[in-house]
Amino acid sequence: MRLHRRSFVILTTLVTLVSAGRPRAQEPTRTLPAIVRLTLAEALARGAAESHRLQEFEARRAAAEAAVAGREAADRPHVTAIGTYTRTNHIEEFGLILPTGQRRIIFPDIPDNYRTRLDVQWPIFTAGRTAALTNASRREVEALGSDLAAARQDLRLEITRAYWSIVTLTEAVRVVEAGTRRMDAHLDEARSRLDAGLIPPNEVLSVEAQRARQEVALVEARNARAVAMADLRRLIDAPDTADVVPADALEPLPAAPPAFDVLMAGARPARSERQALSRRVDAARARVDAARATDRPTVAIAGGVDYARPNPRILPRRNEWDPSWDLSVNATWSLWDGGRTRAQVAEADATRRAAEQRLEEFDSLLELEVRQRRLDLEAALAAVAAAGEAVRSAAEARRVVAERFRAGVATSLEVLDAQVALLQAELDRTRAYATVHLAAARLERAVGR
Image (cartoon, rainbow, N blue to C red; front, side):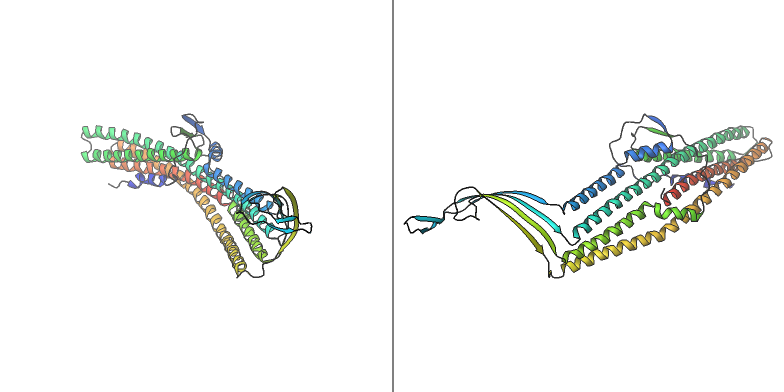
């Protein structure tokens, strides 16, 4: 007897449709009831709203936007209030004897010194360094926005994969349960024939062994569905006790993919990862300009108002509060820094080249990815048609063998083989349906949708 044992390990392949991610510990939201029906669109919307990963990217973008504001503020006046108190040792007072005979103190002994200052610094020319750093920060904000869009697309694919895994494994459980019921009916009939002395005991034992293997397959299918359910609950931040029932069915199937040239025409500008890489290339170029501006002259205006006791700018010194002010224009030009600027420029330029090469590498892989995903979808659609034909043929073969068995011209082992072949064909069709939906989702992700 040749049993199609491969049909009972097909569930292992179905389990691979479930995301391998390990559920993370988190505080679940309690907005879902114990049992809820969700369409794929509703699951995607809830996952996007509740995702901690997306919130992390949004926080990073907010930090980058704050960094841009800090870069822009570097070109504006800086006003600082300063207050100091200094205690000095006692000194011998210095003075002069006037012609009148009186002694005039020029430098008195004032151990308590107080000073307040309102200081203003305004860089009016930085040779483009501040503008370049601000531009680099803006490009980084744009890159993080593209990273956020890519994270949304990744999350969308994960939720889609988990959702269709639940649908697929639910269907697999139904298929195995139906096969088990058929096996039970055949087992009862085989036992009746054994009691009547029409078949030997080994045929009944073979049916019982096959029935036990189908029970194992049913346990595995239910466990795989529970794992997929846990993964989907994690992705949409649902309570651990919620039973998410998918409202979408495996049918209807997605449409056939457009031509490869049509897909590629929209994939390059639409891919968020490419947009992020392009923005980071621009940021790296701006940092090169900022590094080169380091060895150029800079001009700043400085000034302030002092109110001190004693005021060191007023002679003779006296233990009284006196005001004073100053205003200056400072030009700074680093003539030699030991090669520090040259090293900074080289580092920034190397970072730029690395970013450009990474962008070129992404472009070289994008075409391969789109082509592969399109071929996967075409193959999956073709497999569905073949799997449907296989189910029809297996069902008819089982019906014919069952009638021949009742007529006494077929053995129980032939019926068993037909039962196994039908179960395998139904599982293959279920897997083919799921593969089509997942292939369509992966193609959408490859073209940046």
